[in-house]
Length: 126
Image 1 (cartoon, rainbow, N blue to C red):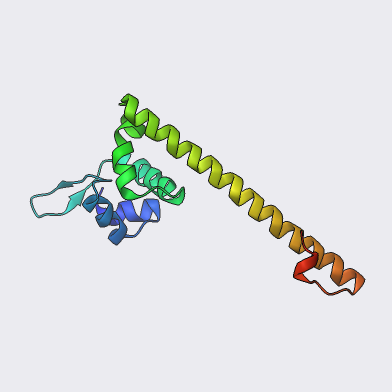
Image 2: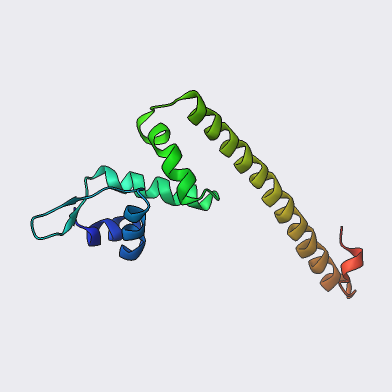
């Protein structure tokens, strides 16, 4: 498939796909006229890259981990890196859950205060 079709299928801009290639996160073959062509598996690969970016991994880290994640080619060092990244993501999930719970408390307190006519002061929120 061509780059425009890959962009449409994944919701990722053509510019981002070109960046992924520059960073060696995605590989295309070139036609004689220079157009990029991707295999169908590129859709899954782009989605994986997006998920890993969303989890906070850098492009450099993704490139290093990609052989293990995509092909299952794992060295002890790669497995250790994956475990480290997984632990970091787990901590991030915990931190985000705490932040969400704090916001829930604010929303709940504000709603209660609206019902009782009290003001919502930051020092009363825990």
